[in-house]
Length: 192
Length: 192
DNA sequence: CGATTCTTTGAAAACAGTCAATCTGTGTGG
DNA sequence: CCACACAGATTGACTGTTTTCAAAGAATCG
Image (cartoon, rainbow over all chains, first blue to last red; front, side, top):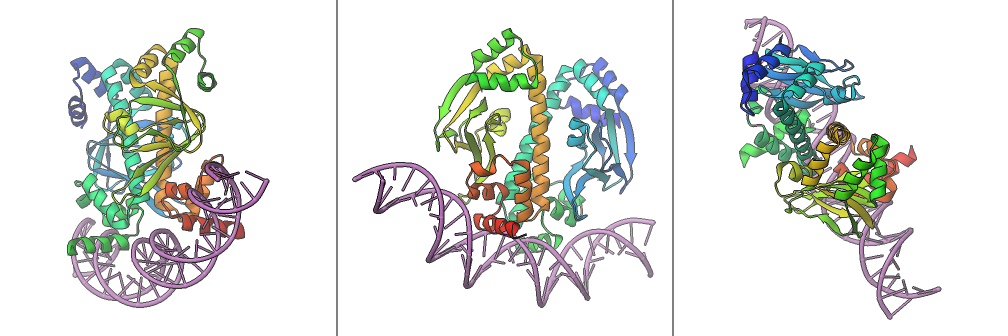
């Protein structure tokens, strides 16, 4: 529902009726069933996707054919492939739904148009990019400095609301460890 | 030298004489000797730093007191602590010079001012942030999906010009592996 | 309820980390 | 200019962690 999206935005900055109207006009609501793809590797990603319901996961496939989870995107998150979006090259990411979900899609040209029309939205979009960048730096630090158990603890601290909605083996994949190692790390934690 | 910086910018987009002047006015050139800090953890980082000469390394210190290299910044790169810059909180990063170096510093307020005055510069700054974000995503993918040897190969492919300028144990730290493991991985590679 | 997916557990193997010693090259002070 | 100190790299032996493979339980879904 577009209403969810507008509510999310108005929680960040005020909108006039005209602006709300303008935004609503460019929004396309799309339902995505569990296991269905929102984006497949190789396709061009040229839109913005706001998750209004459900949860998505993005992942890459390496040379050996193994999947590696990049991100989990529940309600009120944005998903997509920034690499493809910014550089206009084929996506390296796959994105699929882990639950029956719903996204608000805004085509890139439409988005650029409304950013110009609504400066507060442009500011917000910039802040979002900045925050995402800083978050990715924190994740890198965690990946190069932590043991398997520490990585998991960091994960549950950062994303407490996600743990119970996604399979553990995907969390393991996100952390760069095997599902068995994660299972054992969890075991160690309860024993302490 | 500010001239290097202006040359770097003009390589990306054209500048009028007035704009060049405007930029030069806000630039502060600073020499940083080898081993000297540009930024220390806990300080507030509220400037933009362009490396005009030499090379820097930024690193974080974890709970156990171990250093973890975050980035190497040679000539024509930007360095700093984005987390501190954007959120205006104390820096988590330390930055020091690995060679006698020189940076161009622009205070945050000055920078914001010239971004408004020079739209092409603002566009460029935005693109820079986008690219940095995408690059950090690629690094995350490498960290969660590769073995020690693969990480090193990825590193030399991505930063061929840096390998011979920084000590190996810092590259190991950047990759999240021990210096001994890197040494052995290099050995394996020449044998193949 | 049956099928599938997910998690757990065990044992073995591969991998990476640690510690200590040696080797190398560089730079500094006498 | 040499000698020495020092930082960095390598090597070996050992330890510890993580992966892999296989199998068995548990949970979920149609």
